[in-house]
Image 1 (cartoon, helix red, strand yellow):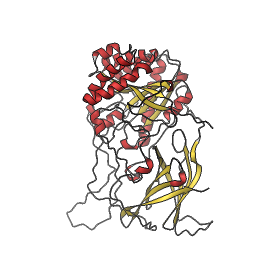
Image 2: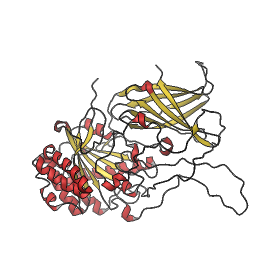
Image 3: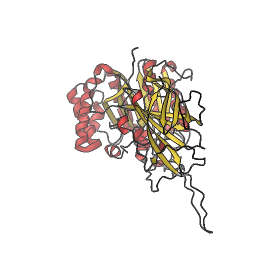
Image 4: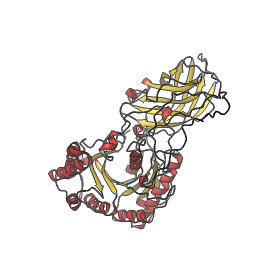
Length: 507
């Protein structure tokens, strides 16, 4: 069966900044006719972003602009450039191209085949709070801005997808819901301004597609944004919306620490250690578009050794080793994220502040994903797609120190690498091959997935709190799922331990 997917290429990237944009560029944004002129413009942008190195990269971007954009998109970019200058906002333009496999954000220096371009994307940033705190309502100035942007699409006969993005502070489900309400409100503005309601779709992506490091204030601000996508049909809309996440940019979450009750001397207070406390509020000048809880991301450094006690009996012993940090043990098996955001949607300084390190499941959390909805019906748009090879609703098993662990069923879609269901995890202590063995422990789960160049992270979180099991990282090998590896994190003797294992599906 032929599989068809899309990818995002940033062969053409324009940053329209109301404060720093070059006037000559603004005046000529709609008249780019050749590669040479495009290269010159790109150099101007690159110089603004990153000095001489940025100028060279910018020249490469500009050279692509010269032959990739058409008159319709060219005119829109010109008008939005002027609007960005007037309204003091940033609008980033990208080409959407169809490629072989996953949805990826390519480096600006990567070449793109002109014939693969199938659409256009504009992302709107702002230094101001455009929505009310924890509200989906636009303030009057922001509403005026989006009315002007929407008017640029009134003659379009293509499909328009409005995507709301947030940082990853606070509750993932809350972030998703609020971002969806905000995206829908922007979609309504497009409808009012003449875009056919049947052509408008909206998606609350929440925290799932970060383009900058959420562990910094500037990075979190960049992740709060509205994206406007134009594609030719509904199928392309669904494919684009199903992009996998880049785990590199998620906020590091420290494991919840449960401290043993200790007899303490009189008049001595023992502070309760809880890493799940909310961060401090951010001042108004740091708030931005599609902000959710408006909380300040913290660059957390673990000052204490990880120590956790289980409030259950330690009935399992996997002979694991003590966890000393939150590094991702299976990086080689994963490779690099297909959503590796090396392009300059963020400034050079922000890029240098990136974590550049993938964390294990102890430093992650379950992240809620949503589906695309039609503005006309407010119903989810579904599409039948293929499963990844070997991950089509099948059970996987591993045996660790005579304990059989079954994860069933595992189901992951091909074009999005997302899990279609959450499996059950069953643990069989002292398993001796019995066909009718009863599980010693059964746990419900939730799953995050992240696609890499070598494998897929299938991250299992155990929903029950009163258990030794904390979470599990599995990387399914892209070439052969039966060569896959994993790491189990669990508690024993008042510590968090880890144990690597090999896992395969039941044939």
